[in-house]
Amino acid sequence: LTEYYDWAVILAEKLASWSQNNKSKYYICSGGGPGMMEAANRGAHKASTESIALGISLPFEQGVNQYASPELSFEFHYFFIRKFYFLYHAKAVVVFPGGFGTMDELFETLTLIQTGKLQKKVPIYLIGRDFWEGLINFNNFVEWGVISAEDLSLFKIIDDTDDAYETITR
Image (cartoon, rainbow, N blue to C red):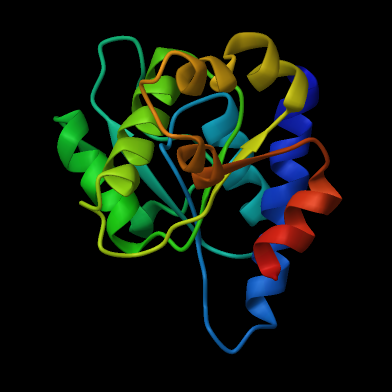
């Protein structure tokens, strides 16, 4: 996962720098914890921009990571409230390899978009083809008839930070 951590730092730094030169201000927002979440905040920090951290109170994590802007950091008790805040202002969702929490947030987001409960279009980018295609055979969902083929267009798998940057900023 070290490679993906580095990718997350690079992509977040590039997006944060791009936002500084854009007439509309965008912020990097993460879950505030360690790992990929830290990498996102770290990339924004490297670009000398503020970033948002939406932490969750867990017995094995102690607050948000050191790279998040303290004035933009929040800690939630309930996952569903945190998910709401993630999506409410989101213009795009970038998902790096992760565990159960990552899968929970990804599939809830996909479900909200699929069912029309999210009243806006939010593109979803899954970073790391080897991870995603090795973990989940998305086509099997269609073959088993539990989603439609059109649902596969709700996300895009990207395997390169430059491609991700170009796709997101477009």
